[in-house]
Image (cartoon, rainbow, N blue to C red; front, side, top):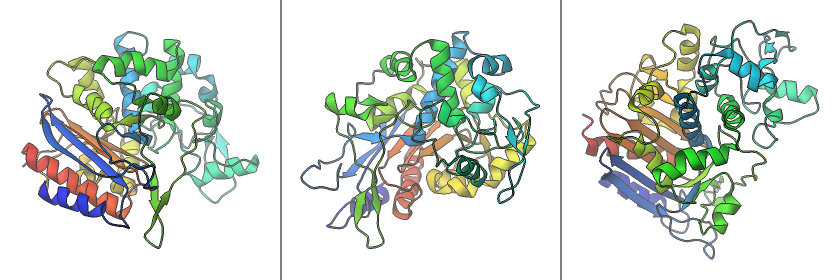
Length: 399
């Protein structure tokens, strides 16, 4: 831990800090701290800035996806959602159900085919539905351009902003995309309330989160929360603000703001002796490997491991590609690591503003690295993430 603590302080110190601020928390199944470190500031402007701490509010970006998965599984336990019933998608998400599939390769004229395979909520939760991000895939950018549009996924109103062709037949590939945004829409339609309202009642209040978590950062600020500015580093080494546009819709795939304390409360419940959010049986479902029976999807996922290695650190880079699968809430490590030790069963994912979470039920470890730097995988921030992972596993007795 000393190495992580030292490097964190060095990275956030001086007139030209390498990163703005980090809050890093890890706890065991009894709620006791394994690691708790914070260093840096909440704003580049020294007049506005305060020291970052566990109550400072961070943009979760794609760390939101885990909470959306939990929301969906609570509907499953309530008997309102079946993960494998395609009629649910047909009924509630007709705009998704009717989409064609792009068959052409990048750089070629776009061609399409009809969807012939059933589409389910499980596909959406595991990024195997074919729904991509328009700002990541050149074919989707081409589709937008033909309509005189730019990318819409992060700024447009959903579900309309999500309604563009799929990239493959359901279950026949893996692509990081808008599946969780569609799940958020599904949760709202089935529950009859907004996604944010459902999360407040069915998740945040249950584990004791205060109001420093939600989709509306202005409301969080009105409630007294301090939002940590998202920063980026220029060629000269100076930090500057990375503008985060105000969300027009509540996005299940990325859009929540939360204090590290609140987000860690949610993670902690997943390893608690008596979990409140999901039954032990449903937690087994959340953490189960999902792609073992889908060889095309699994192969596609493993080919893309290098693309997200900067966000998941040594949890993925210290194991072979064959040790990586996907659960309903994030990537799943299926083998132990010679470097880190007993990490089998760890579920992990990160966020576009430089955050990382991971949970291992068997070892009783829940951890969150809350950064506020863009783009994700930035050298120094990624290096600190790696030190954080090693520090947590060292103290948790992973070897």
